[in-house]
Image 1 (cartoon, rainbow, N blue to C red):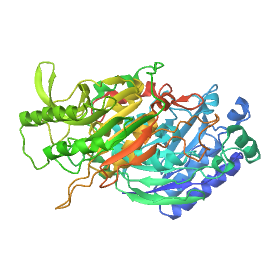
Image 2: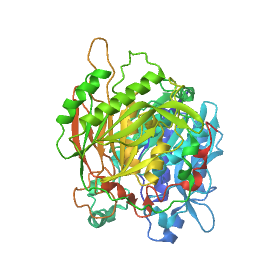
Image 3: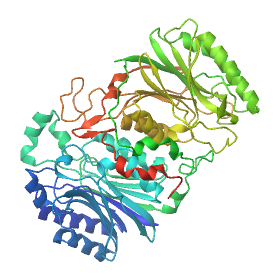
Image 4: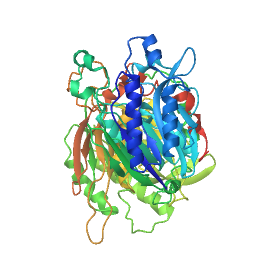
Length: 579
């Protein structure tokens, strides 16, 4: 067990004052009994510089007085301290670096920032090595700063190398970082997470008004967004700081709990990965030729109340309830199979073919509508004949496209897996089909985005809350994809199944920081998706998405979600199981 703390405070432009703040907050955390302390990003000086000489002057030497003082505090309090600073990495280069000092006051871990954000690219060099895993008496932990945790690659590689706890140092004004990106990293890797953010101005106070006018960001949003937090491996927030005040939040953590990566159906989130499918993540980025995409598209989630064959009968009335301009409707995974039925694989395949014939008949008078669900269908891989849970896209003329499941599920080892991800170009955009089970693996959604997918259709059957609360929105936001995902609530006793647990996730068209936003004023959320939830008992959920918005991946200058991903250090994602 370890008592971990996230330290939340403001930093300014005076390095000596910032050191005094760090020491004061460390002493405060020690009074809380913390054995591991995580401090924010850029503790030595806010990330704002007059020129290259200024950036170097306020950056630290590894053996200089600032970091020696932090090391001495680690020794005094017999604690591990994680701090992030701008560092003089060499005579020519600066890095944004997280450092860990152990209870003996010795440097025991280092992680340079892999993905720089906006103007950071002007002053700093990207990491050229993987971050360290610290092997402490209470378990294995690692570090990464801010932007490295906004997408899956860096944390995933660290989890595969055995980390049980992520220490995330933030310098962020984005409200969606605390509400989505930070907590999402914990359950998708089944690890604990301690995230420490800033409060107070993130730029010099005398420049606030001018910068606000230039960037179109209200002054109140140029402050650190706080909400430092500690999250468990299932996405539950154990402690959270306020948005706008200095704070220390603590929690007792048993890191051994993170070693069990199994979902309720037995799927192991690490060993079920299929790195052969993810090779593009570690390949040099290439500009994507965007497929033609609709500016706006009407879509729907459908959730029959009936199960088994009766759901097919009910479907006709659901389709009739859709507006005429609906282009895509998604049904829950295996919606026409009854969980109480015991069917052989041939019988499950026969049900699938029956369902396809029935749905195609229902679509005969809807030429503009495509219908997506998952069914059990025959699958031949090489010389092996089998069957797979397959996401299918149907139109009035039959099967338009299909995507057999890519990752194995613990409860159904007899099913076959596909060996490639397939995308389909529709008149309104490039579409990827995935079963809900594949959504557990962020790598495959990243590959879809690299290939230019604009919309993701997902027939779902969620097992745990984090899949709905974090996996769905993070896959949409971090890859800039519109997502249409339908899921049915499970039955409970004699109660009819509640219809609807998925969501339709649209993209904000105003997205790139430091550019004029035409449709919304900046509200603190950079890329949180616009969510229309399927509500219990609601059989038809209708919304509009904007596929063309998925073409814009530029978060800030020199920070494209796809082209500027940390591909050179993503090789860990291509190795089998835990490393």
